[in-house]
Length: 503
Image 1 (cartoon, rainbow, N blue to C red):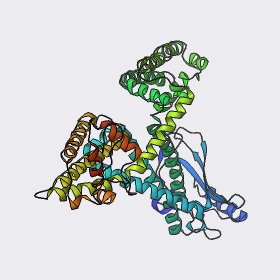
Image 2: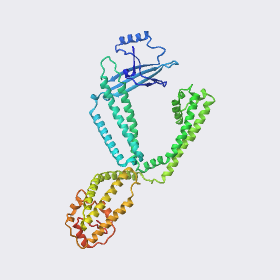
Image 3: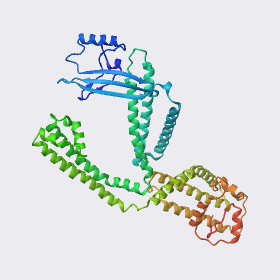
Image 4: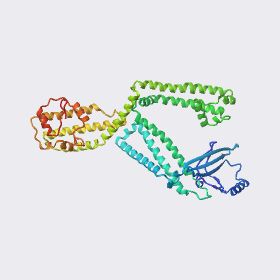
């Protein structure tokens, strides 16, 4: 046998059951597959004192494959030998499908699905970077954005760990030659860590659902309760940590020498936490220490369970009572209706917003061209006023949609923008009144085509959608307009409202 470093053996640091770190180096021996040769090798090791008083651990590694299930397993049988004596055995198994180690055996459907998920994650990351560049530091004021980035970073780490086994098996020659032992510990470690990251990221992805369910009354009640109680809960956790630390040290010092549940600091913490859930061993504590056993048990159950735990529940109850009056009650059918309305509004808003930036850019460009005119006639002046209204209306709708997506209504000042829009509409109506006697402008003709080229008409060639036309009619001030203005306004490609005058 010979000594080998951890790099040569392909091993990492292993922490044993006695909390001792083994660096991965040691005296390495390969046992032949032939039974007679294996017996000779073991006898040779026994005769030459391969195990001595300085030996602290024995690692036996096997790499097996089951063709029926297409699974490979790394078996690591460990026996620790502490300085005080005894032997502590432990069995470590790391199992994974064969296609996670060899790229040639990867399933096309799984590869396509993983590639699709990777493309989606990259798309959302690029979109979030765009929001950061647009909003600046304001972007980080929304706590949900932090959760989104943790989710994206976990996905990136999972994708990296997913391809590490392919690289390792190519470097180590997979499958191994008959009779040879190849340590695939790094590749199997990457597979296990990939599963751990996916497990953690599944929880993060599940928590992100609350971001979109906050519009539901019950979920809004839950989230507002957590937000309201966060300050008091933080203070409570600090107090609980101090008390918990004191009892942990006390139980460890009193029972650590006789009871395995309190042999070190970490195990004592877990044992005390389990005792809050009803898992304790009072009889053994009393047998170990007749004085401190009952005393510490009584103090911990009285302070930890009856006082601290009930205080935490009281904080949550108080927060629920505070929030309950702010959130309207809703039946189950109303809740489903509200969820459906939110989803429908989200889809409609997406479909609408897709074309609004283009319409806004077109309207601004045409307005900029008309402002360059030195002496515009009355018809051109009217179209310029209408373009101003169009630009203001589109800008307001885009900002409202963005604020609604972020769940922040404080960034929108609807009254100011609405007053500005109504003022512009009043100016356009005043221009129509002045044009009552006659209109003569070759640039004003063209019906809907002129308005569409100016960004006033919809993309399908029509004027305004029914909802938007109704909204404009409600916001227009009442005006008694003469009948001749109706016919003359048609020459400009304008439509009259039927409810008191409107464009």
